[in-house]
Amino acid sequence: MMRSRKSVMIIAGEVSGDLHGANLVRAVRRQNASVRFFGIGGDRMADAGVRLHQHIHEMSFLGFVEVVRHLPFIRRVFRTMNALLDSEKPDLVILVDYPGFNLRFARDVKKRNIPLCYYISPQVWAWGRGRVKEMAELVDRMIVILPFEEEIYRDAGMDVHFVGHPLKDAIQVDMEKTPFFKETGLDPDKKTIGMLPGSRRQEVQRLLPPMMEAFRSIRRAIPGIQAVIGMSPALDAAEYEAIARRATDRPAMAAKHTYEVMAHSDALMVASGTATLEAALIGTPLVVLYKMSPLSYLMGRYLVKIRFISLINIIAGRQVVTELIQDRVTPGRIAEHMIPLLTDDKQRKAMRRELESVSGLLGEAGASGRAADLVLDMLA
Image (cartoon, rainbow, N blue to C red; front, side):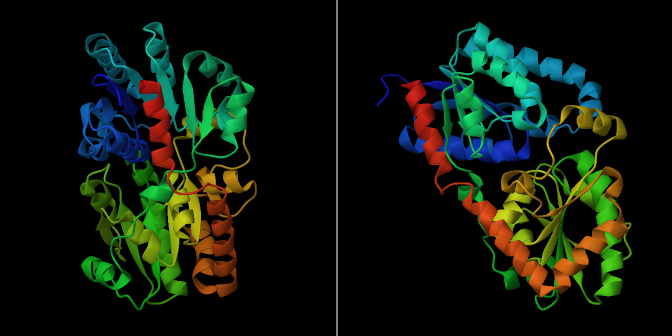
């Protein structure tokens, strides 16, 4: 047991980080309830007992252009968090993914000689292996959740630990198909498409309209098929409603039931990100969509050096799911790749087998608990 009450600053800037940060906090406090957490996060982290000084609603930006537009706000948050480092004097700082903010903030932590743990590595293998050396100078312990990341950081001389993927603990389907469909106004006997257009306003604005147009095309090929939109808790329902109400064939809407949408749909249209991996772990066939502002995309193409954008394909090292990127995100192309997943049993079963193999590469359940052990070791 620790001799005195410990204080931890934790920073997550996105929905996935809020989820994993909350599960880490709970796992730590199950072993030592006296540890006090404060920082940046969302509703899940707040529910886990983190005292929030900034909410992720205001922190989640997609693309270089959007970040530049919000620079004055970001600078204000930096000043606030630096002031808290000085006033609260935490025993440990935990940074959860969110590299655009966290890698810069790590320098401020280092200047104060506060121990620093990075949980869920920035995707340096995609956009900047050259930054691993810098991270080695700033980060005292790296906790990674993808198997190939461990070698990258170990080669740089870092204290790195692969704990498995925390989504294996987080995914929980609470409602069976029939009650879920009854609640959302769907018919449990009809084929169903799940739409997951993302957790950022820009994603929803760019991806939901072509998703709904694709649904119209699919209905012509598969009469009677229905659709449901999984709404992220990070956005107000009005963001989705404003777009969905324009549709002739309006999909159903599901708030706070993302995993039910994934589990009870026959196939999914999913914005690239953590949701694609969640769908893979649940095992539902999917098509991955990715679209950002033209300038941000051009800059991203210059910086990103990997073959795939979806975590499923990156982990597998080959194409398991179709990726429709930027100008290829059209209703026609989405429908073209979705229809076989809804009608061809052989193709559906083949994809399910591939998704199961990806799940097997992500380690055993219990990642949050193993990460908590490493955090408590640093505090002790």
